[in-house]
Image 1 (cartoon, rainbow, N blue to C red):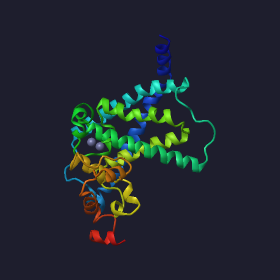
Image 2 (image 1 turned 30 degrees about the vertical axis):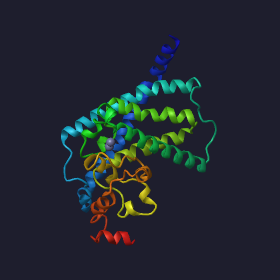
Image 3 (image 1 turned 45 degrees about the horizontal axis):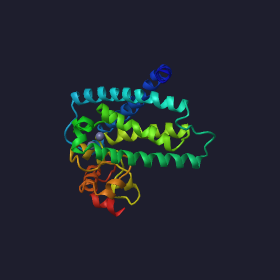
Length: 272
Ligand SMILES: [Zn+2]
Ligand SMILES: [Zn+2]
């Protein structure tokens, strides 16, 4: 009974604030990326639209409604996590953080989250899990920024679970956590933008190719469910042989004309 009343007390303290914080995070990132895409489609960058198909109004309504539900799931799970912090079951980071330490923590949490995402994503594509966990997200064939949190409840829970697992292993400075949350939602909205936002040559650049593009995740929705599972980085897909064989060619084709005054051939990029 004590535990239950403790949890209820924590819920009273944090539920509304946590819900509004996560909802704002989603709405701000999705609307910024959606507005950017809308503006770019009035320019020569319109040719960077990855799919010919347009997302429908019913896609938008389903995705925004599901994203609000995802925020609710995150909030419900945040209550016991906050309680665990308050009661010493999860460790809080003490002290100041230097810029190099900040960068190190941020890199570590991004790499860990990417790994979590890749392997849970692959697991959710297993026939036993797909229907209940991940089919909902794949109702979206043509993603937009609003698709970012369009998850079934079990998938939303799986996404949230990374946080307590990470915090149980690493006590992390608060500024790193908030930066991570900002990067996460922004990259999520960019990955679903539907219009390629990365510079020409990115997917074949010796360093940048390890960071995913919009085309990378767009192909997972529109071209092949069985390729391109990664989130921030492409190394798991490259390592496990799950990168779509047409990924680089598709990226080069999509970015071929726009972003340059010279509508040059794709191999002009390769030479650079
Ligand atoms: Zn997606
Ligand atoms: Zn998937």
